Image (cartoon, rainbow, N blue to C red; front, side):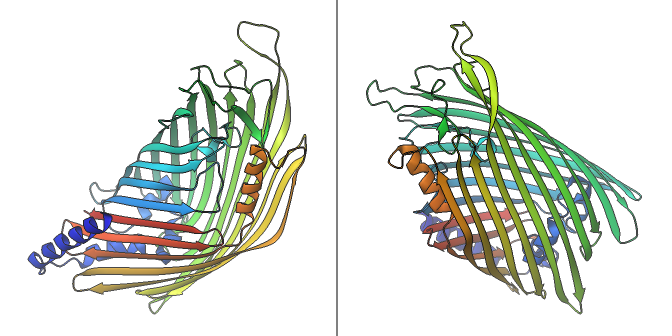
Length: 503
């Protein structure tokens, strides 16, 4: 079915080209290049902060696309599932020529997909609330809908640029068979920034932000027989026996997360020169369970990142490097409760710090090329450690990734063609695991061992991408693109087809 839609759409676009073959769209091709070129993409990452948006692109554009994706994995984290299948509708806009000295931008998307065979996790937005998820051993496919809206505005006044940006995300997840989670979450982000031209060539920018996240998580059973035990995980298979059991109530488990963000950047105005960036985010979160009004878990999630690089151009030849680091540290506390028969439920009498999570990434990218081709070799080092302190459990892995990505772009009479190929090999330098006082034959024991096998795998990844932009008119530029990935060792297969327009 997807193949027929794709062929029909391509035929329609070809017919449109025949009717408009005399149109000239060279300036629009440049707008597409600066959004899809891999060297330009490394530079663009420095200009996505609000006060640097006026320097992100030279040309305005509004792309709209619909995407279909299908992912299948044989080695995976059971709490995230075996893969996703579904579609998205997305649009974004960047306008720097509507009003003098103003730049405006926005983004919106809708995603509808199914996460396959999710187990030991009935909670949405795993990356934000882990390891504090509702767990049962049955699980199943989880249907998810996501909505996202964001936008911002920047004004340049001489050497200064002032900017503001806001975004909102909503996530709705459910399952129509037992166990039946019904989750809804909201995620609000605000950011403000200012940049100053410290010289005719360079900008200094500071940005601050704020994030507020909330989730309501419920789990129901219709069948009277065969209900699995429901536990509320505290990390690495641990849970509080007093707070866990069977789900017989319609009350909700509540999550909340809040925190500030800040960053400082030093960048060139025209994408050539030295780049530097440092950023910091710290979120504090909590979970409230059914049996008590007090927090059952509290945690802090700290992110630090840095970027440093150089981009040059001589006689049409581009070259440079980019070094980056991303450091995430998560520390969690769990409450100790007593049942005194209070009407409000269990009473919290103390708390203990039990969970530690460290995930660090260090990466170096080199790049060189010309207008129609580029090559980017890269290497990364990723030390990872997760601990639960009592009883002591730990998994630790150190990895290096080596890869190279090549891209080719060519202007044709009928449009613009882009192709890329990425080869990457992951290698484990060191690994160790201790899962004390946890039976391997239990469900949670299986969970930990599957997670460890997934994290310590050494796959070889091959990714191919292609995009073709058609010439139809000065205002409308259709395109088709695809992405396909094959991962050996992890046995991952991923396909994505995109059909869109650029206004």
